[in-house]
Length: 192
Image 1 (cartoon, one colour):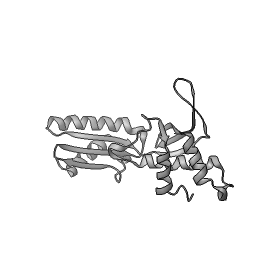
Image 2: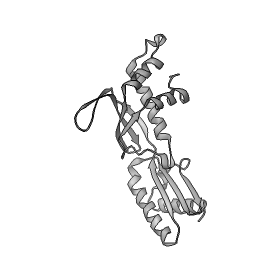
Image 3: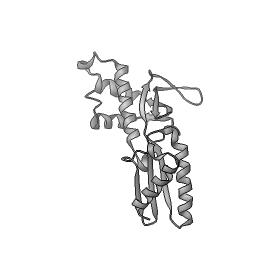
Image 4: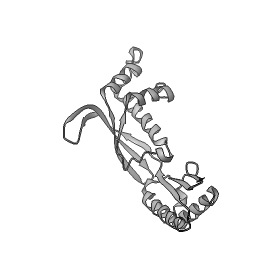
């Protein structure tokens, strides 16, 4: 099976149940490999994930009967809707962890996901040192931290393929010092 045939078959199956209209055609991909085919179907509406996953499961079974192995990922595009004010981290045992947590609401069409972004003290200090220098004392520290969180999540949400992050399944992200350095070097955080 070619990637073009897989794309047409997937499009036909999703069209039959009214889901092709929510597929992001620019981010979705269909690939062929010597041992099978791969489909990454990206939806613009996270509330349709379960339905699309069901279609791809059925397609996988039908292709398996024909001796074709289909590896499929169904994911949604998410955007940051709101970033809450920072609060201290409390771990599962109820202990207070020395960290700062921002609760973030993500949206994808009719779906929402609430996630926590955790910053350890070295990250907070790094933001203060690198972004809130003496010349930028007039900046609101919390607003700057929220912008860093927004850019971090935008980067995490931009990953596709096997590296994608599912915020419905994994509701916590750790913003590390390495991630902060990457953001400062590769994004517009510092300019904003």
